[in-house]
Image (cartoon, rainbow, N blue to C red; front, top):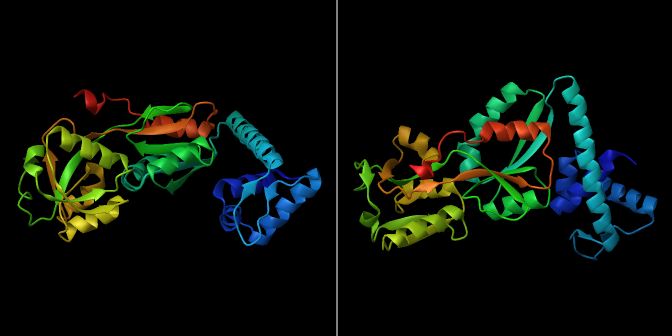
Length: 301
């Protein structure tokens, strides 16, 4: 039995997909099925439930135990590899990171490039998802690190603070607010707004701040990602409140007008999360150190 077979089994359970597990391990779907059968024949136990007509990946009671122990074996094997690499001064291995689109597309790339230049033997594997999914993937061990906005304290999770972002108002260049350098929350009353969907932390924070100033707005659209919101504002759907790093290019190219929000409340904390009970790989530790905010938090300003 090879360590690669254990990894295929774990990936299949984590990703709930034969095709994705095959793709991640550079093998065919039939090879995934064959490796699962090999494991079951070796231990003479069913590891997965078979439901005719369904592709659901469901563990048996034995499979639950096997999955848990496989994770421990793979973690130990990764630690062994990293320890041996460390003996010759190399930082290597792949760090799996899940993040939300606005951070992953606009804030992490320069950090990833810096990390790769310092540790060319290591790799950052970025996945993009919603905050709830990112946290879930960190907790179940699918990824090693998560990077999210408005990280919430939770049992079993460690949070490392990154630099916070300012939230800003964006509007089309021809909008009445476009020439303003700053605007108060109360001036937004009755405006047409393009918003994040309700379960996204930035939306929750926006709603809370507007409510605290007694501001009612007109919701014209809701989207789950920053890029669609920007395009909607650009074509005139309404205005929006977004993290400033995500609109720097559009501001520079005069595609969107960016207006500072006057109140100190408009801050978006960002943080790295990982499982408290997990020993991070050496490469992951180095990446967290690179992301960590060493300057005073904007919330204290």
